[in-house]
Image (cartoon, rainbow over all chains, first blue to last red; front, side, top):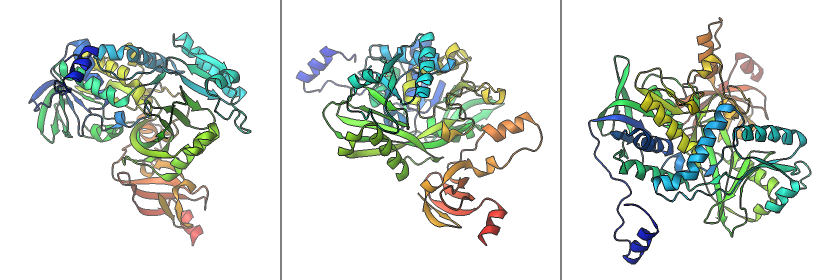
Amino acid sequence: MKYSIFSVLREGLRGGKGWTPAWREPEPKPHYDIVIVGGGGHGLATAYYLAKEHGLTNVAVVEKGYIGSGNVGRNTTIIRSNYLLPYNTHFYEWSMKLWEGLEQDFNYNAMVSQRGVLNLYHSDAQRDAYVRRGNAMRLAGVDAELIDADGVRAMAPFLDFENARFPIHGGLLQRRGGTARHDAVAWGYARGADSRGVDILQNTEVTGIRIEAGRAVGVETTRGFIRAGKIGLACAGNSSRVAAMAGLRLPIESHVLQAFVSEGIKPVIDQVITFGAGHFYISQSDKGGLVFGGDIDGYNSYAQRGNLYIIEDVHEAGMALWPAIGRLRTLRHWGGIMDMSMDGSPIIDKSPIDGLYLNCGWCYGGFKATPASGWCFAHTIARDAPHALNAGFRLDRFASGRLIDEKGAGAQPNLH
Amino acid sequence: MRIRCPYCGERSNDEFYVLGDADALTARPSGENAEAFHEYVYQRTNLAGLHRELWYHSNGCRRWLVVTRDTRTHEISDVTYASKRGEGEAA
């Protein structure tokens, strides 16, 4: 069923009785040309672009929980392409371009809102760093504007501009950045893939990867063995666990990142605003809640919850930036498991095992990358070679020294 | 999360700095084998389960500790000094 204003009106008049499920719940087939492990945003996008761009539809997405139960349903929904280093700049800009056409492309309302992403600076040195970043973006064809303090004041007069320690001097603005409805992104890709023939197998956990004569030939699951021509792993925080089933060790640690939502209030903040003197980012959802977050907790974790000291830290940073939010109550918070790579950049590559492909290392920036990650991973699997856009996101870059380290933090995943 | 430091007693984890996998970070290769150094610097087992990790009690006794913690539940089952030297000072 194609969604449109007419279908909404028609079903509104018929009491919604004509709506059908957005995707099927098929039984697993014994064989698929391609099996994607992980039904999050990236896995579903991969299946969607395999079908749409490469005509490969004998594809299954195997998901241990339900669609939207992982990080795609537990992030702060920010989309942006304000990166400094070459591979990142072009890759995330391609993702931004896909976001801009996504809803028409997969016929689903993902509530993509290009409300602008504003990174504040608080010192001359930080301004210089943002000038450099902005120029790198513009050289790559990405929009970037340097805004002075008066410019920021016109957009967000409620911030603490005269903070004695961290006065706001201005900001780097990407107007095309913004937010998207995270669940709808998963649902839209799931529906788009399913309608092209992809089987989405929910509540089907992969328990093993079968390798015969050096080649990955299928996955053992809780619903039996599924033979596959090729296998793509898009398992986010569980990447190391699944890759270990094929005997691989990855340059990744799993860490917990927390996020927060306040009680709902009337519209007050139009953009996504990030604090430059601490790690804090905030926007407002369409329901009115302020959505915000900060640093990861810092220790390895597979528990989808964090600890109080980071909750305190994030709220302190928020109060330093915008004291008025102290009048609000935090309504809820949650944690997701991040696949923190050793240089802070992702891996989209063939693995050392024939027929096995890797998509991991998204740190806590995976949501914005969803469209380009799926698009590039689909290309890498279908053509058995990376696209130019993900040619730098190689697994062997750690051995060869071709790191992509935006922060220059070194091989310490909890600092990225 | 609270960590029972053998020297200071039970303290909140925000008094500590966490470095990571104790077994990986202390297995520094002795030779000049590039592949061995790649394993040491970049590759991690990233266990879901009992994980031995290095924590530094920066706002306490300033000793390095090995904390055995379940990464699935955050439950801490054991805390020891990372070096024999730390044990000597405690005694």
